[in-house]
Length: 360
Image 1 (cartoon, rainbow, N blue to C red):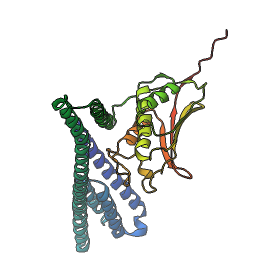
Image 2: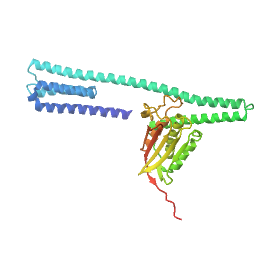
Image 3: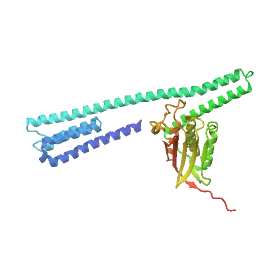
Image 4: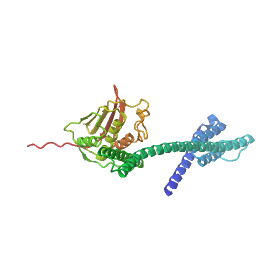
């Protein structure tokens, strides 16, 4: 709370300083050209300056500028010069109108900006509420589905274990395992997104074998990719690289899992890795339908799902992958490629070390 107050105070002081400085600079310029434009035109220039300041700054710095402008115009420009005395009634009225218009301009502009901020905040709250409701409903559905499966299968196993045949028992056990895996994946995604949103995620860099990384991911996804022909293209002599093995494993897992969810069985995909200079490059391509043209640019946004897929999920996997890649100071992109399918490209700056075989 103290830090917030200090920041607000510094910001306000800066506004006062800038407002006064700009007014003095404008007045100084007008002083040198007043013989050309006349002292009444100077009033319009100073009033215009107050109007511009009112667009940018808060109320009180603008009011200070308005009062200062009126005093400067009276003292330096209205005859007789260098005095606050005004000889003519016309100049007195002009001075009074100048001060009134400048003050009203500052007040009205400040109120308009205040109302605009309120409208924006109200719209942001409504958008946040809609997002919260959509997220809550989606999470509720995603949690309820595997939990219902687990509870139903468990109750069947417990309540009727003497009458269940071995094949049915195995089926129910498999259902519990699949639902538990799905539930665990959902919780992991939510926790990973929370880590990314907090800004506290820091990769733990260590020497990693790229071949081991890819095969670890493929083995984790073995049940999901049984019906998907997979090609792994990694040079035998690819060097060791420094990266966070866990984050990169989850990154590749999310991308490949996304392919298995959104492409029909039998779709082939490939995973390749290479080193160019000091950059590790992963290419993951599939032979599926690809992304919708209107959604390919939003593929890595949170809670984005294909509108025509009918698949479950929160739409966090690719967003988390992008966050993990950015944590490595890398980039990830996706494009549709001819004749069909999608191509993910990951580029990460890495340190490399080559392990040469010993001479016998």
